[in-house]
Image 1 (cartoon, rainbow, N blue to C red):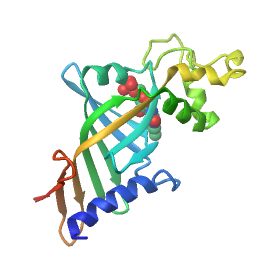
Image 2: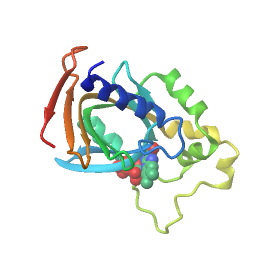
Image 3: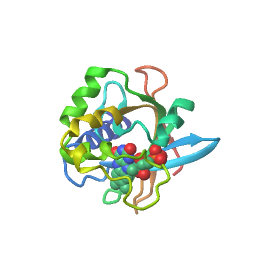
Image 4: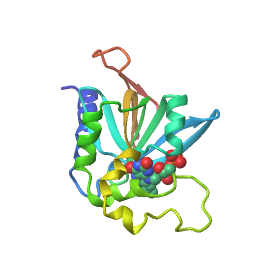
Length: 192
Ligand SMILES: Cc1cc2nc3c(=O)[nH]c(=O)nc-3n(C[C@H](O)[C@H](O)[C@H](O)COP(=O)(O)O)c2cc1C
């Protein structure tokens, strides 16, 4: 494996590791979408990595604003940063809402109780409420936590380009990795 291929291999290894290793810096990442021609960013939790398909997955509330943004414009930029290794990954691609019902059910089943509770909130994320805690679920809802699946969405991001930056006192390094040409991956060193 040459240096460029090794970098790409490490990117996938680290993304996958973040699913297993507590506190891994890639576990939380930021995604930017477009709303009314303006950028909008937020942090999400990385839930799955598919190296073969060059995609990653997170979960969200179907009622959240990002859902309508994704439906309107599927361009996305995902941002990861490992402060210990000083590695930034900017991944560009297309974002889509998972439609495979069995897969969605499976992801819901695998979710922890704490995560499931988020999908039971009375109000949609971003909806105006009178008091800070007005969104909280009722005691009655807690008896049937499984109804939360109606608000549960699985979101996939398929990468077509990665911009990898490694800050180093020996000299920074930056490489652009292009996936657009099927399995023919193109590597391009650029000035950091
Ligand atoms: C550390 C952290 C992790 C988060 N993880 C998620 C997540 O996995 N999914 C999600 O929808 N929102 C997550 N959020 C909340 C989002 O950042 C955002 O506030 C919310 O989804 C509403 O975004 P929207 O209005 O753009 O849809 C997280 C926030 C933080 C601070």
